[in-house]
Image (cartoon, rainbow, N blue to C red; front, side):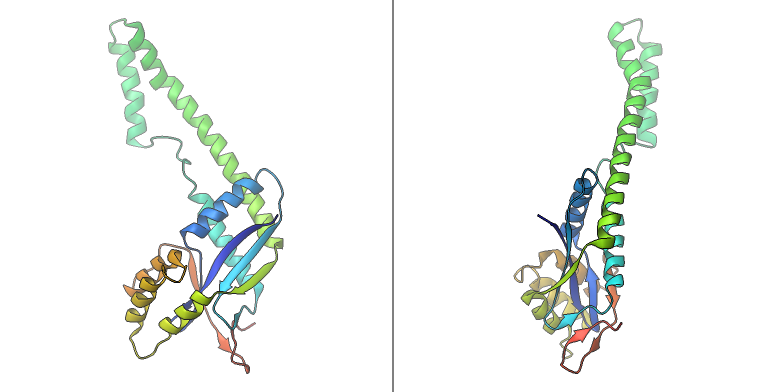
Length: 224
């Protein structure tokens, strides 16, 4: 069975933007962990409003690669434990226990662990995690370059297009309305995108605006 990775063609006030909300990033990170261990088929699914098609798959693949970089780089636990001043404080406490333990065996053992054992374990754990991330990135890079792309209509996105492109309202108000509507439309992950756009801020999720044109049949697509 193929691993399905979904991103969204999210309607904007002046076109469409590709977006990878947090659930999509989690799915990409999970796929990376699998692909880092074994090869498996991958399906790239682009959910879009009715009548919208992508003119150049290279742009979609490029966006998937960008989302994959963000997803794998943000994998939890890469720091391998406390860092910076916290790490230095733990090691210093270890030496204080050794030097000021008054000969207590428990203090010396605890101090040796903090001063020497913990840093060594931390480096090994971090090395294993970084190796896993490298394997995940390599697996995703191979899959994203070859996986088929399927565009699928989503009724919720069609409704969001009506909201986002309702010229009777200013763009900020349209985006706030769209953000509030996402949950009921089965697109809760996109709420963050529209909420940020409604504030005039840059969304914290991967996204990019795509130029669109309207075909003779009324369909909307990205120009080749």
